Image (tube, helix red, strand yellow):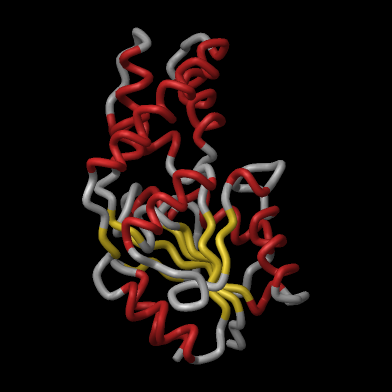
Length: 222
């Protein structure tokens, strides 16, 4: 398969941050008077733009969706502090995978439901640099519709003048990542078990492959 562009989720797919975003989200919701478990947050919110994730979570548990904005603001502030304290690292083998993939002439775009500010904070902690580890970054701030809308993937395609979605691989650790790839018509969708959701949850989205780790995709590309 002639894959020319890889669109890769960040936390849980390329970056190991110990699910801190979802732990922080659960904390922000619970601090507002609710009682949700981390498992429920992972089930409902994984891969989504975070304000929309909070709204969906509140709907799911019978909460007041009018609380969304205040909880999101608290969550955003808490996450900045959490990331300042957190040691983040690449998921095993992924940094080498990115460098080898780019050396083979393929483009790598990181995409995320995070804000640009949070995404850049993560990349700075890792020491990852544009044109070395990746070719571009697309965040929730760059699009009007969040995943599973294909808008981020289509934006990535337009940046590198790729018109055939069959030349695009989408990888992520949530069902929403896979739905995003399918909605864009990607040639390959890969789910990974290194992040938010388990095999059963990922399998429901019908990815082409489920790998333990993104670096296992090397056999398909190089």
